[in-house]
Image (cartoon, rainbow over all chains, first blue to last red; front, side, top):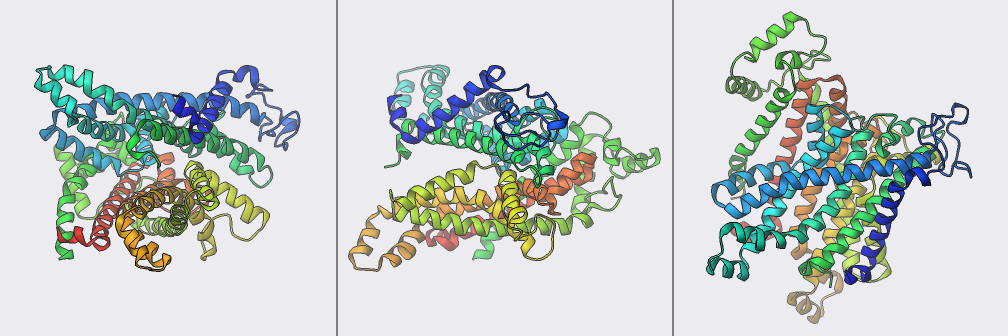
Length: 273
Length: 307
């Protein structure tokens, strides 16, 4: 833990993530205005003291919308990473631990799906279930299942070959005990690192779906959805596009820094010399 | 020799392509409702639905339906768009070329910018240049693809009025979308190039080359870079695929009439034959990219060729 704090990138990333979480949690108290309150006489106003990020085409306060949007993004990130873990880890564990034909067939399928970009897989799932925020979370989660399956399997194979697993088996431990006591705990560090990075991908994907009109629907203050509307006023009111986009970027930078830092600390093999 | 290798890879890829056709076939069946009605579109007459049901055997068991679907595909029949009632294949060709044009321009920018940033970062480690390259590549991978597009439009077409904000025409129309998409790829390519160069620069043969008195330029580009290429080529291939996916967003921002925008339009119109066809074409692209990456391993590293 202390190594993590000494890692400059990770500390920076953690600070951004904590700040974002705080904003999301305390949005109702921190936000200067009601994010949904429309002021038609005051639309597309540039940034000012009353509206630091300006107002959008319906006169809503952009800062307040961005703050409440943080809640949506964090929930999307959490739910979709959770779904991907729930779906992908058991598949990877089963394939890696069982080996044989089960492993071969699963991994062929996973390889095919991994060659698809996350956003395209998510769009395919949305095509089946229909647009909306809930389905977007589901779609992003499902789209990342193959990645988790592959990652978990890789970790299992690495751990399985280690001496202490062989020693456990030689001393007569049951397979299920080996799996839960020895293999699973040692697969957690790479999964934690990837989950941080996938959290970033999920937030980006949700914004992409929102922007394309396939995710959260207006007037929900989701960052991507806000931008799809703001885009129409790019020439007259660029601030409505700039601030939500900047927020997404900073958030994703923070998560990436944290993920890279965690990798450096938890995974000595790839630690930057 | 190389042709045999390509042929072998093509044959090995057939099951993968079949799996994709099963997935695409399944999409329409997973949507609640009668597939014939779904494929015929919202405005189809009963007569049209009946014809479609007969043509694609939609009242028969799923394996028969799939056989009919696959048979159609093998004859180049991707179905008809429910919006225009024209064959999908005819519409898709030009849009596919547009997307290919955009993604190719983007990957070239990504390789040039990312590769250079990675090499500079690795050779001048811990310098200002390295630091800057690292920050830029981090920002590159973290910036939403559509947002970098909006910002470029704001800067170069609204403020400076140098370049068009969208649509097609000459090369000028390609610049902003390609840069916007390319910078996204550049970040990942820069990271991989840097770490893979760093690894190689620490090897004995690089020290040997240096101690022979070779110019640093030759050591880096001829000795080190060539040996660092395999992981870089893998990432470039992977990024090319991601950029094709990212093109869905870039095309929307820049009103670029490619396959990605077509996909979004088709989803909005619930034009399922078009959606199915576009996903298939995307999958075929990823397959071809993987093939090219595989072949270039042999070009990059003679040891792979010998296997």
